[in-house]
Amino acid sequence: MSDMFVTVSTVALGIVVLGSAVMMLASRNVVHAAYWLLALSLGAAGLFAVLQATYLALVQLLVYAGAVAILNIFTIMITLRRREDAVREREFSVPAAALALVFFGVVAYAVSQGVPAAAPVPQTFPGIAEFGAMLFSVDGWALPFEIASLVLTAALVAAVWWSREEEAR
Amino acid sequence: MTMGLSVYLLIAAALFSLGVYGAVSKRGAVQVLMSLEMMSVAVNLNLIAFSRYITPEKMTGQFFTAFQMVVSAAEIGLGLALVVAIVRAARTAEVDRLSELKG
Image (tube, rainbow over all chains, first blue to last red):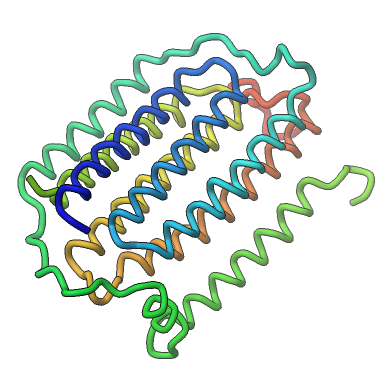
């Protein structure tokens, strides 16, 4: 990818991501907020693709923009009884804004003090095939991968258990 | 002009700060969870940017991100199931009205 393309797409996707984050926090309707989160996930997937993480961009699209967005909307539909409940009062909290601003200030100061020097850019970036080979190799990441599948199974069972009807338990 | 590591770090920091603001200030449980999700996207963006600029060949940050995505997917699934259970038991999803430990 040429430098020009990377610069333009990073700026555009950064605006998309931060803009939808602000809109998500500002929208009074919960359903609208869920859709802004979907836009944020799509923008983040684009940023991952610009950063040469093709596999993770696809996972972001499938898991966050697909499954999690649907899950959010379903939970909103289950927990709200009437259509009017989706529209909430405008909430603004000064202490929370101060906390967020202080956090951003500290991180921005740390970044301005210098970041680690970039490694030399390789001729070709490793693609999905190399990623998969390293993920499943025994001296690579195979053991954490298996543990991750255990975590997901436990979370799945617990989620089903929690959301069951009280009488069925 | 070329994009450096610090641009991505700043985008991720701004995203994380917005997530902190939402997680602290929002009253609806689902909105708090959506803010947490925003923060986890910011963390992933940081890891991938570091991976692209510091270890492009070994892709360490990308593997970290893959496992972080697993953990945050589990967190979101459990959190939303918990919200459904809380709404059944307490008839509300407002976090500031859930002040009793014994339901």
